[in-house]
Structures are given as C-alpha cells and as structure tokens.
Image 1: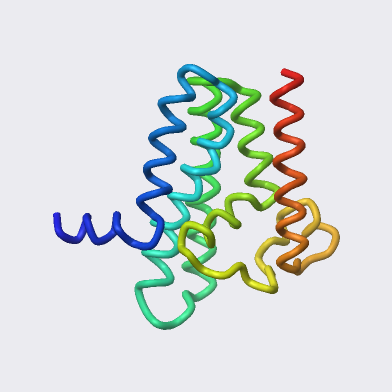
Image 2 (image 1 turned 90 degrees about the horizontal axis):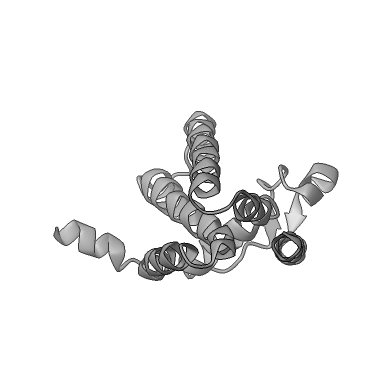
Amino acid sequence: MHELIKILKYRLLWLNILLSILFAVVSFFINEVSAILFVLISNLFDILGYHFTLIRRSKEIPDKIIVKSYRVNQLLFDALLLLMIGIQFSWVASIAGWIMKLFGLQDVFYYLFLKEKLPLKWNWMKWTPLGWFKGDLTKNEIVIQSIIGIIISSVLLILR
C-alpha cells in the first residue's frame, strides 16, 4: 500500500488520475467531454507504462526492442480505448480524442503531468501529421500542431 501511495503522489500523476475520474463522470452527462477523457487515460497509460516501467527501471535508455513492444501495447490500448469511449459515450468524441492524440496533445500532457520541460527536439513524433512530412519536430511545432488538433477536434464536436 505504501508503494501505491508513492506512485500516486509522484509529480502530477495524482492530477492526471483525478482529472480522468472527473472527466469520466462528466462524460455520462456531456458526451463531448469524453474526447479529453481519451487523451487523459491514454496519458495515464503512457506515464505508468513508459515512464515507470521502461525509463525508471534503469539509468539507461531502453533498447529498441523493448520500446517497440511497448508501442504495440500502447497502440492496442488506444484502439481499445477508442472502442470503449465510442460505445459508452460518443463515436464522434472518441474520434476527436484520437485526433488530439494524433496531433501530439497526449505527449505534451505527458511532460506537463511529469513536471518536465518539453524537449526542444521531438524525434519520435514522425507518426503525427507534420511528422509525416518533416520527420523530427521542434517544441514549437509540436505545441502548434497540438493546438491545431484541439481546434479540429472542437470543430468536429461542435458540428456533430
């Protein structure tokens, strides 16, 4: 139990959990809110799975095989999350949440909830819309891309 409390108190993980619970409850009344719930739960998975399991397990960067296997788990988790939110709340909100993640908002949340500075170079974001064209992205490009994802998702939810 002591270890669980230490995990929950780690940086802003408690806030991510609290917001996830809050947005889950509110989603039953306002389905559109579940788009943010998607990003928050996906972020929670990334912090617990990547940060705690892979990065914090040793002082060395995890080897490529371990990271790739984690990415498969992450993709499957996000697909399941997309289905669960779509079935329970709203397919439009679920897709809006996926769009925000696709545009990098979840990765920005990852650093904010861990109280770490956003990296200047984002070389793992090649799967984002701008990353498909450019490759490595800068901090400003990720922030702008995330804002664009929020705008696209908001328009999608409003036009629904």
